[in-house]
Length: 232
Image 1 (cartoon, rainbow, N blue to C red):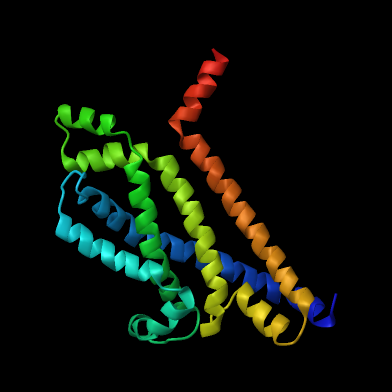
Image 2 (cartoon, rainbow, N blue to C red):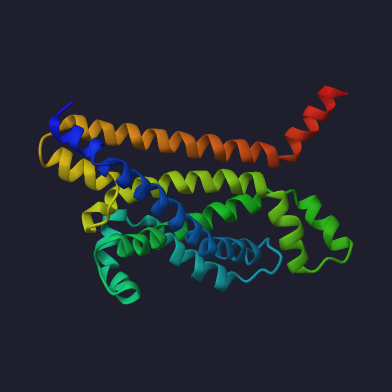
């Protein structure tokens, strides 16, 4: 272990940046879902086979989502620096990094949500319609509850993806494990620091995945039904 790595541990610097990585990832994921979830629902509802087909709106919204999703994150950061400056008053730092992560993640979330909603059994939707349920009732009482396990798995995937983005966001002055790996590891030729950052990232990813999959299984009606049958 190099002296610099020991100093990072003793000063708590590496723990601080690990925590920054965690909270920026979770916060940006949360905000991205506030934006991406309704967009994903709208994409599904306005699809030609959706509740309220509207092809022009669906294609326009889908085009915007696809353009943002297709942009590599590094290029997206450079392109949207003025946007970050407009919202937070700066194009560098943690606040700007959050804006970039949200812009990159929201379209990704929208597509995952749309895909999850398409997995809902059409028979359940038709049954709700036959009982006189409105479109809003179908969305909130059928679509979202039925797609909950898939939505949770999508949230896990989104969180892990954003975690990877956060490491690249250190190039615009954002704090986190990416900054430690680049400044203290790569630029100072300390490979042990780089691998420690990798280890921290792997642990964070594993925790996110295990917690997310556990919650998804708990909310999956099919798994609960199978367990009840086994008990009986």
